[in-house]
Structure formats: structure tokens, C-alpha cells
Image 1 (cartoon, helix red, strand yellow):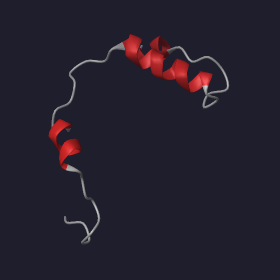
Image 2 (tube, rainbow, N blue to C red):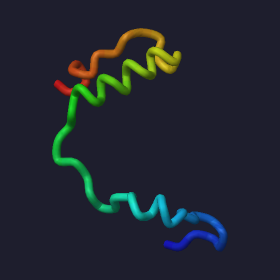
Image 3 (cartoon, helix red, strand yellow):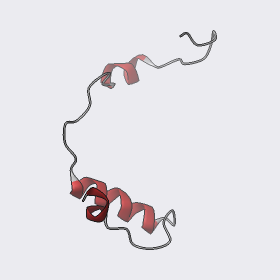
Length: 56
């Protein structure tokens, strides 16, 4: 699959730090909870979200 000409451009600096085909083997609940907390703080979630409930 190819993109139309002019689409999908990635700057050299960005490409240098991208990680392709490299996925974490585990999940860090603390880091995910921070995301949920920030989403709540900025109004993307209406109530508190406890990530551990999702991971069980």
C-alpha cells in the first residue's frame, strides 16, 4: 500500500526517534493511570477512572 504523493511525510528528526514494529510486552498501570488522571483534569472524562479495573 502506498500513500498519494505529498501525504505521509515525516520529518527526519521525527523519523530518527520513531520506533517501528517495537511494542512493549507489558503494561505499566501507573503510567496508564497518569493518562486517565490528566484526561479527567482537562475534562475528557466526566468522572475518575481507575485503570486497575480495566486491567483485571
